[in-house]
Length: 67
Image 1 (cartoon, rainbow, N blue to C red):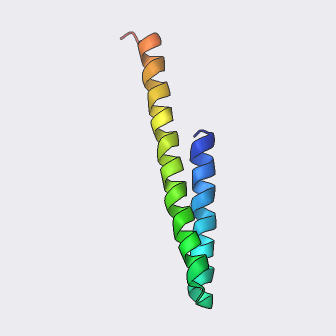
Image 2 (image 1 turned 60 degrees about the vertical axis):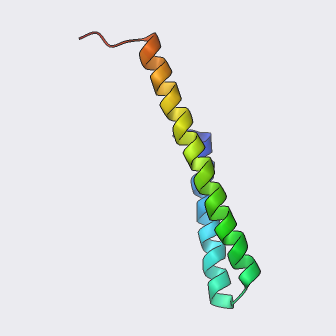
């Protein structure tokens, strides 16, 4: 995991809490913020996964495994 994946997961968690509190209190604005945070967090997490994949591919090209 890299920094983007961790931050994205955290942002999704915060968004889930905001969404739940917004539902419970009937606060549509808080709920919308929560949904936005969940979407933004998922996007950031996806960027982190892509970065990890690119880093692994780069390492494999630079240091191929010998069978």
